[in-house]
Length: 254
Image (cartoon, rainbow, N blue to C red; front, side):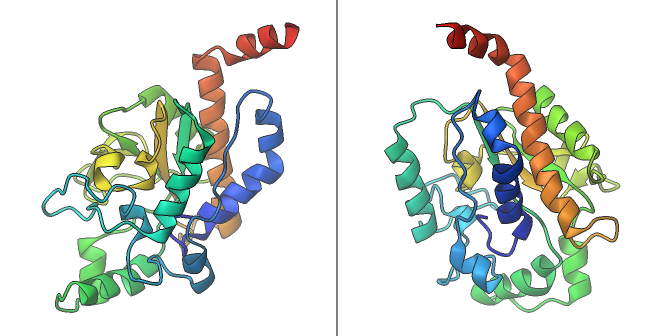
Protein backbone atom coordinates (compact mmCIF):
# COMPACT_ATOMS: atom_id res chain seq x y z
CA UNK A 1 0.00 0.00 0.00
CA UNK A 2 2.93 2.39 -0.44
CA UNK A 3 1.49 3.27 -3.85
CA UNK A 4 -2.21 3.90 -3.35
CA UNK A 5 -3.42 2.69 -6.72
CA UNK A 6 -1.68 -0.68 -6.38
CA UNK A 7 -4.66 -2.39 -4.75
CA UNK A 8 -3.24 -5.89 -4.25
CA UNK A 9 -0.54 -4.39 -2.04
CA UNK A 10 -3.26 -3.37 0.41
CA UNK A 11 -5.65 -6.25 -0.20
CA UNK A 12 -2.88 -8.84 -0.18
CA UNK A 13 -1.60 -7.61 3.18
CA UNK A 14 -5.11 -7.75 4.64
CA UNK A 15 -5.67 -11.22 3.18
CA UNK A 16 -2.44 -12.39 4.82
CA UNK A 17 -3.68 -11.05 8.16
CA UNK A 18 -6.99 -12.85 7.72
CA UNK A 19 -5.60 -16.22 6.57
CA UNK A 20 -1.97 -16.72 7.61
CA UNK A 21 -0.76 -14.26 10.23
CA UNK A 22 -2.15 -16.06 13.29
CA UNK A 23 -0.30 -19.28 12.47
CA UNK A 24 2.95 -17.49 11.70
CA UNK A 25 2.70 -15.44 14.90
CA UNK A 26 3.73 -18.62 16.72
CA UNK A 27 7.17 -18.23 15.12
CA UNK A 28 7.52 -14.55 14.23
CA UNK A 29 6.65 -11.18 15.71
CA UNK A 30 4.67 -9.79 12.78
CA UNK A 31 4.24 -6.14 11.81
CA UNK A 32 1.93 -5.29 8.89
CA UNK A 33 1.45 -1.79 7.47
CA UNK A 34 -1.28 -2.53 4.91
CA UNK A 35 -1.93 1.01 3.66
CA UNK A 36 1.01 3.39 3.88
CA UNK A 37 -0.62 5.91 1.53
CA UNK A 38 -4.32 6.08 2.47
CA UNK A 39 -5.00 9.22 0.40
CA UNK A 40 -3.53 7.51 -2.65
CA UNK A 41 -5.59 4.41 -1.99
CA UNK A 42 -8.84 6.35 -1.65
CA UNK A 43 -8.14 8.54 -4.69
CA UNK A 44 -6.53 5.78 -6.80
CA UNK A 45 -3.26 7.68 -7.17
CA UNK A 46 0.39 6.63 -7.10
CA UNK A 47 1.59 9.91 -5.60
CA UNK A 48 0.42 11.57 -2.41
CA UNK A 49 -1.65 14.77 -2.46
CA UNK A 50 1.50 16.85 -2.94
CA UNK A 51 2.49 14.98 -6.13
CA UNK A 52 5.41 13.25 -4.41
CA UNK A 53 6.02 9.53 -4.77
CA UNK A 54 5.94 8.00 -1.26
CA UNK A 55 8.06 5.08 -2.46
CA UNK A 56 10.93 7.39 -3.33
CA UNK A 57 10.78 9.32 -0.08
CA UNK A 58 12.19 6.94 2.53
CA UNK A 59 15.76 8.17 2.21
CA UNK A 60 15.89 11.60 0.60
CA UNK A 61 19.68 11.76 1.07
CA UNK A 62 20.19 8.55 -0.90
CA UNK A 63 22.37 8.08 -3.93
CA UNK A 64 21.00 9.60 -7.14
CA UNK A 65 21.67 7.46 -10.20
CA UNK A 66 21.58 9.48 -13.41
CA UNK A 67 19.01 8.26 -15.92
CA UNK A 68 17.26 5.99 -13.41
CA UNK A 69 13.68 6.50 -12.24
CA UNK A 70 14.53 5.10 -8.79
CA UNK A 71 15.70 8.42 -7.41
CA UNK A 72 14.90 9.78 -3.95
CA UNK A 73 12.27 12.48 -3.60
CA UNK A 74 11.53 14.74 -0.61
CA UNK A 75 10.41 13.09 2.60
CA UNK A 76 6.63 12.71 2.82
CA UNK A 77 4.11 12.53 5.64
CA UNK A 78 3.61 8.89 4.67
CA UNK A 79 7.27 7.89 4.89
CA UNK A 80 7.85 9.94 8.06
CA UNK A 81 4.87 8.30 9.77
CA UNK A 82 6.00 4.78 8.93
CA UNK A 83 9.61 5.45 9.91
CA UNK A 84 8.49 6.94 13.24
CA UNK A 85 6.24 3.95 13.90
CA UNK A 86 8.98 1.44 13.15
CA UNK A 87 11.52 3.36 15.23
CA UNK A 88 9.06 3.33 18.12
CA UNK A 89 9.00 -0.45 18.12
CA UNK A 90 12.64 -0.54 19.21
CA UNK A 91 13.62 -3.41 16.91
CA UNK A 92 17.40 -3.61 16.57
CA UNK A 93 17.50 -6.27 13.86
CA UNK A 94 14.65 -7.16 11.52
CA UNK A 95 14.48 -10.65 10.09
CA UNK A 96 12.30 -10.08 7.02
CA UNK A 97 10.75 -7.22 5.06
CA UNK A 98 8.45 -7.85 2.09
CA UNK A 99 7.14 -4.73 0.35
CA UNK A 100 3.93 -5.42 -1.63
CA UNK A 101 3.42 -3.67 -4.98
CA UNK A 102 1.81 -4.13 -8.37
CA UNK A 103 2.21 -2.62 -11.84
CA UNK A 104 -0.97 -1.49 -13.59
CA UNK A 105 -1.80 -0.08 -17.01
CA UNK A 106 -2.40 3.24 -15.28
CA UNK A 107 1.38 3.51 -14.93
CA UNK A 108 1.38 4.33 -18.65
CA UNK A 109 -1.97 6.07 -18.99
CA UNK A 110 -1.88 8.23 -15.86
CA UNK A 111 1.40 8.18 -13.96
CA UNK A 112 3.91 8.69 -16.81
CA UNK A 113 1.96 11.63 -18.31
CA UNK A 114 1.62 13.23 -14.87
CA UNK A 115 5.32 12.69 -14.09
CA UNK A 116 6.39 14.20 -17.42
CA UNK A 117 4.11 17.19 -16.83
CA UNK A 118 5.49 17.69 -13.32
CA UNK A 119 9.05 17.62 -14.64
CA UNK A 120 8.35 19.93 -17.60
CA UNK A 121 8.87 17.29 -20.28
CA UNK A 122 6.99 17.08 -23.56
CA UNK A 123 3.99 14.72 -23.65
CA UNK A 124 4.40 11.26 -25.15
CA UNK A 125 1.91 9.01 -26.89
CA UNK A 126 0.65 5.83 -25.26
CA UNK A 127 2.60 3.78 -27.80
CA UNK A 128 5.78 5.68 -26.91
CA UNK A 129 5.12 4.98 -23.24
CA UNK A 130 4.63 1.28 -23.91
CA UNK A 131 7.93 1.12 -25.80
CA UNK A 132 9.83 3.18 -23.22
CA UNK A 133 8.39 1.42 -20.19
CA UNK A 134 6.89 -2.00 -21.05
CA UNK A 135 4.92 -3.63 -18.23
CA UNK A 136 5.97 -7.21 -17.37
CA UNK A 137 3.04 -9.59 -17.73
CA UNK A 138 3.02 -11.56 -14.50
CA UNK A 139 4.50 -11.66 -11.03
CA UNK A 140 8.13 -10.79 -10.32
CA UNK A 141 10.38 -9.72 -7.45
CA UNK A 142 12.76 -6.78 -7.10
CA UNK A 143 15.80 -7.85 -5.11
CA UNK A 144 18.65 -5.89 -3.54
CA UNK A 145 21.81 -6.44 -5.60
CA UNK A 146 23.90 -6.00 -2.44
CA UNK A 147 21.91 -8.72 -0.63
CA UNK A 148 20.57 -11.11 -3.30
CA UNK A 149 19.25 -13.98 -1.12
CA UNK A 150 18.78 -16.12 -4.24
CA UNK A 151 17.41 -19.24 -2.49
CA UNK A 152 14.86 -17.13 -0.61
CA UNK A 153 13.77 -15.30 -3.75
CA UNK A 154 13.37 -18.66 -5.55
CA UNK A 155 11.23 -20.05 -2.74
CA UNK A 156 8.82 -17.14 -3.09
CA UNK A 157 8.66 -17.37 -6.88
CA UNK A 158 7.98 -21.11 -6.63
CA UNK A 159 5.18 -20.46 -4.14
CA UNK A 160 3.58 -17.78 -6.31
CA UNK A 161 3.78 -20.03 -9.36
CA UNK A 162 1.09 -22.18 -7.73
CA UNK A 163 -1.29 -19.19 -7.88
CA UNK A 164 -0.42 -17.19 -11.01
CA UNK A 165 2.14 -16.93 -13.79
CA UNK A 166 5.65 -15.51 -13.43
CA UNK A 167 6.62 -12.61 -15.68
CA UNK A 168 9.03 -13.55 -18.48
CA UNK A 169 12.08 -11.47 -19.31
CA UNK A 170 12.17 -9.22 -22.35
CA UNK A 171 14.19 -10.40 -25.37
CA UNK A 172 17.26 -8.59 -23.99
CA UNK A 173 17.06 -10.40 -20.64
CA UNK A 174 15.61 -7.46 -18.69
CA UNK A 175 12.39 -6.34 -17.03
CA UNK A 176 11.61 -2.63 -16.51
CA UNK A 177 15.11 -1.95 -17.80
CA UNK A 178 16.81 -4.02 -15.11
CA UNK A 179 18.67 -7.30 -15.64
CA UNK A 180 16.82 -10.49 -14.74
CA UNK A 181 19.18 -12.24 -12.33
CA UNK A 182 17.11 -15.40 -11.81
CA UNK A 183 13.68 -16.61 -12.89
CA UNK A 184 11.18 -13.89 -12.03
CA UNK A 185 13.70 -11.73 -10.16
CA UNK A 186 15.46 -8.50 -11.08
CA UNK A 187 18.10 -6.71 -8.99
CA UNK A 188 18.52 -3.01 -8.28
CA UNK A 189 20.98 -1.06 -6.10
CA UNK A 190 20.32 -1.02 -2.36
CA UNK A 191 16.71 0.18 -1.88
CA UNK A 192 17.89 2.30 1.05
CA UNK A 193 20.10 4.32 -1.30
CA UNK A 194 17.18 4.94 -3.64
CA UNK A 195 14.59 6.07 -1.10
CA UNK A 196 12.48 2.92 -1.43
CA UNK A 197 10.30 1.52 1.34
CA UNK A 198 11.98 -1.88 0.98
CA UNK A 199 15.13 -0.30 2.42
CA UNK A 200 13.53 1.31 5.48
CA UNK A 201 14.49 -1.62 7.74
CA UNK A 202 17.76 -3.52 8.15
CA UNK A 203 16.09 -6.86 7.42
CA UNK A 204 18.36 -9.75 6.47
CA UNK A 205 15.69 -10.93 4.02
CA UNK A 206 14.14 -8.11 1.98
CA UNK A 207 12.35 -7.87 -1.35
CA UNK A 208 9.64 -6.03 -3.27
CA UNK A 209 6.78 -7.78 -5.05
CA UNK A 210 5.24 -6.76 -8.38
CA UNK A 211 2.18 -8.32 -10.02
CA UNK A 212 0.11 -7.27 -13.06
CA UNK A 213 -3.65 -7.18 -12.34
CA UNK A 214 -4.45 -5.99 -15.89
CA UNK A 215 -3.01 -9.15 -17.41
CA UNK A 216 -5.47 -11.17 -19.53
CA UNK A 217 -4.11 -14.23 -17.70
CA UNK A 218 -4.82 -13.09 -14.13
CA UNK A 219 -7.60 -11.67 -11.99
CA UNK A 220 -7.47 -9.18 -9.13
CA UNK A 221 -8.30 -12.03 -6.73
CA UNK A 222 -5.35 -14.03 -8.07
CA UNK A 223 -3.09 -11.03 -7.55
CA UNK A 224 -4.19 -10.74 -3.92
CA UNK A 225 -3.54 -14.45 -3.42
CA UNK A 226 -0.18 -14.16 -5.16
CA UNK A 227 0.92 -11.57 -2.58
CA UNK A 228 -0.04 -13.97 0.21
CA UNK A 229 1.67 -16.90 -1.53
CA UNK A 230 4.85 -14.85 -1.77
CA UNK A 231 4.83 -14.04 1.95
CA UNK A 232 3.98 -17.67 2.74
CA UNK A 233 6.83 -19.05 0.63
CA UNK A 234 9.27 -16.51 2.03
CA UNK A 235 8.46 -17.21 5.67
CA UNK A 236 8.56 -20.98 5.14
CA UNK A 237 12.02 -20.63 3.59
CA UNK A 238 13.25 -18.56 6.55
CA UNK A 239 11.92 -21.12 9.01
CA UNK A 240 13.91 -23.80 7.19
CA UNK A 241 17.09 -21.79 6.72
CA UNK A 242 17.17 -20.48 10.28
CA UNK A 243 15.93 -23.76 11.83
CA UNK A 244 13.23 -21.77 13.59
CA UNK A 245 10.91 -24.72 14.13
CA UNK A 246 13.47 -26.33 16.41
CA UNK A 247 14.18 -23.02 18.14
CA UNK A 248 10.47 -22.42 18.83
CA UNK A 249 10.04 -25.95 20.10
CA UNK A 250 12.96 -25.51 22.49
CA UNK A 251 11.58 -22.21 23.76
CA UNK A 252 8.15 -23.76 24.33
CA UNK A 253 9.74 -26.36 26.63
CA UNK A 254 11.26 -23.71 28.88
